[in-house]
Image 1 (cartoon, one colour):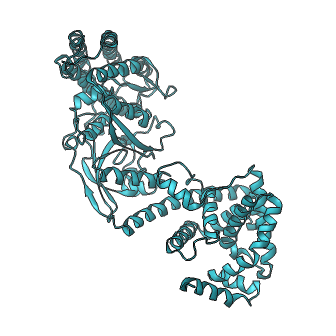
Image 2 (cartoon, one colour):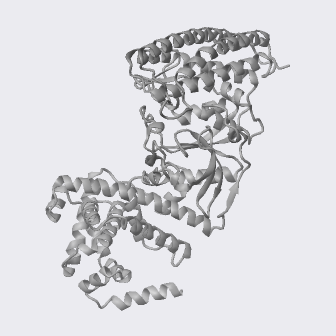
Length: 600
């Protein structure tokens, strides 16, 4: 018999002569062996009772496992130590009936199987659900050891248990009492209120607060364990890629396109920023928030699908981790936030995303593979690039893709704790074979679709040509937020400058030749001229509504009647030029649909 089993057997014999009440007292003092003896004595009875209710072996086993977890963590509430048997029986009964109320049961996978799937990136478990976490902890910790004294299995069991106990310790005494009464003993808020002399409303408030704290603590613990596992595997290191050229001199207000340009620097087909802006369609975007022309308009789109399609347009597939399940807040304005809200301390008070552990692993894997990672809201609500990491100091090496913050190291736990509380990381995964004619055709198709079709956030925004009408309506109604208006002016002006440059390069043969290319090149030069003509009215709008100046004058006064009238006139002239450009794109697209691929 191995030494570990001898010790376990010796402890069992030591407690066999003790009565239940003495074992309960010892267990309350933290003696796990005493609790183990209680489990050994009562497990068969618990299982039989659970099976008589659930009528299923697997369901009964899960009930017992969950009941044991609840008993262990709630043992301190058992005032009469001689009544352990009826007390644990009540917990089993509550768990069994709760199991039945959830519907037909199925055999669940073991915790180790679920962990393996999670590490493989599959959505096998709801780790954001606290009930699920605790239930699985109970299932794995209390399973009979089928592996003898396997050190690996023992380590897994210990780490699982330590995770559970660490999570619960984040609660105050009162929070823990209320939470455990609700979750472990299945008491109603009204019953808990009577027990602790609290109103039902107070119980709900404590439960809500406790669940949020526990969820955050769970994420923090998982991240700590992730870093510890890297250390134990000997892969703790500092890994820094070459700094992306696009970060050395940010040249566009469209940080999504700048980040894509940075990603492509590490591939075998890097592209100039003007080609990225054009081919991805960002040179033609306009997305205006109704009523206020909000600052979030340009970034109110589904990041994952849109940016993935943008990369596909230039011949690459992407992978991403995102918790963007709702539109960005239309009135969220970083420029108007109090300075204390922008500090590192303020970030640390915001909630971590449930996907934080997965995102951290994603960043490590991508950088280790030699690819930077595109990330949202790492410095402030724009896109940035992570191109390195330092495990020992838990820092990313990253750069902001705008002209505001430059480059810096950022703590791991700042990820997902930005102003808008959203996580998004993306990297290039593989290349797609695509000829230049198809790339250009797809670009024109994307631009036309954006100009004419309303995208996802229809209620808050209007995109394309119709966006100008929403913008004009807001100016005429005197409802415009000045800094947001100014930001939109500068960003769209910059985008159209790149649209002109893109079509100039296409007209000059930047994408090579194919049958019909002479006609397409001629139309591209016409489109370039139309986009170039937008520069003068946009320059006047930029002068009227300055952005990169002192906050006291930033944004100008778009709601002043004379200024609004001038702005409306200029926007109408821009819209007319854009309408003509769309007609040219229609003609280009028709030719490219007919022309077969035949490169010279």
